[in-house]
Image 1 (cartoon, rainbow, N blue to C red):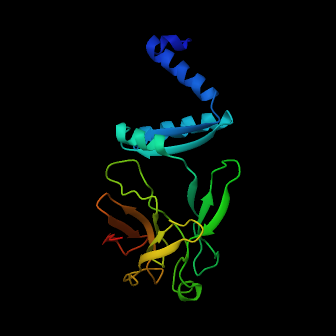
Image 2 (cartoon, rainbow, N blue to C red; image 1 turned 180 degrees about the horizontal axis):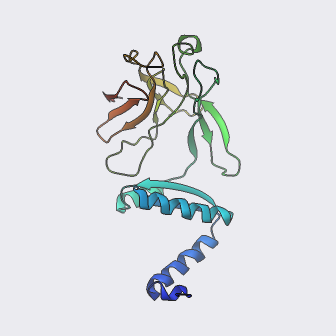
Image 3 (cartoon, rainbow, N blue to C red; image 1 turned 180 degrees about the vertical axis):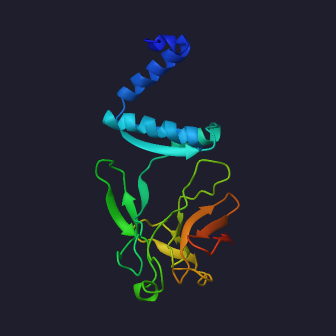
Amino acid sequence: MVTRLEDLAPQGLLDRVRKAADLVDGASRVRVFCHYDPDGTTSAAILTRALMRRGKRIHATLAHALDRSSAARLNEETNELLIVSDECVYNDGKDWPKLVWVVDARVETNPVPVATLPMPPHEAFAKRGGRFGSHNLHENLPVPTSWRSDTIVVGSFFNAGVRAFDVSNPYQPEEVAYFVPGAPKLSPAGAIQLNDVYVDDRGIVFTVDRFVGGLYVLELTL
């Protein structure tokens, strides 16, 4: 039976692991960057759990590869502004309001909400059918195929469709575009329920209904 770590890995690898451990011990916040597949996400989950046990603040990112361009973007990040979605989970507006928040995170130990993204009228959507409120946001993934913007936020809002917001002024976000399709045939909700959204590097928006409406493909022209 193997009883020593030195018997499981080459010495050169162990030296690099110990160097990394020393660097982590000296940091209060750790960025975890992992591959976007089952092995990568599992490894990231194990690593972040271990870091949390050591009292570290963590930020994990999933990507297809860590190349020079993604490493450069990571070095440029300041994480001063966060966009946080509070997911709606009940039909007919029973858990309203479920909003998207703009949070000032310049002081990591004291995040401060500064605004919410404007929502369409409650009376027009709450009883339309299914859920009405925030859900998924397009993320600025550090991969070549992902659209990225520091000023435009795109999100899905169930029966309120997919919507885009300009956060150039984080204290007063503005809605700049929206798409709300009609109710899909045979939908148990009786209304569209756009669930997920992704924007590729060409500005093509992919959004999907959570029941029977299928996939919608749009062009972002902002």
